[in-house]
Image (cartoon, rainbow, N blue to C red):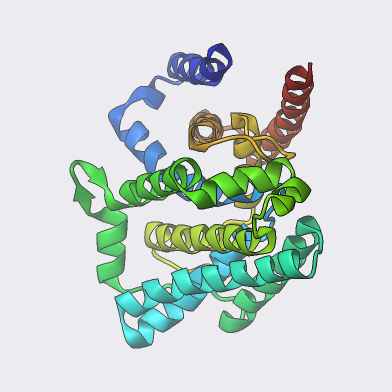
Length: 307
């Protein structure tokens, strides 16, 4: 229990320190803005956590987000908001399924496959719009997802909360979730115990693709546009957040609480650096350092557990 409280305690200390350095950080307006800013990263991190807990990795999520946003915006122009939203989600799931088929049934490396899919999805997104962002987004979609509040919280925040809750329920309360942990802990043992490892690996990547499609909804509404390169750094940021929170890179361990903590730390760091005017170059440096530190911490955690 003590280890689980280390990161929440660090978040509190970070918040207090940020408020001292920049008093505007603790303002209600900034905290509300921070909550909205965190949602795309949180949603992507939920999908990434499934891939990592299962012993894999999904480096294509940022590009899939871009592709889903572009496809959804194009469909929305001709067929309406509901069809556009459906197209975003379907695009994410379709690419995730393709990743899963190649990884699970052709027995290829998740790192290599999803890295290749990153280039494929990004290229298709650029070709569909010839590199030009789509700004003609249905006002009804932007108003509802981007600005409408429900029970005092923006719909964008509710989407992030519900996605995270869905991830937590799947991992902790379903057979699928138990199999994800089993596959990540020892794939060979899971296969010998009767688990259809290929099928559930396929479902893992379908879920990560779904999360990319959900994130596309949020980003498109938030920016009032569909960008062919919407969030180039979000995949690495999600990876850093997941590992920093305590999800094991080797698979088989972690949960949504850890994901939320990791995302919160990264989001707070980025927010306060923006407020005090830190250069984007130094912010990239900080994210890189966080990733390296997260990997080192993961290594130490595994050594401690092995004792």
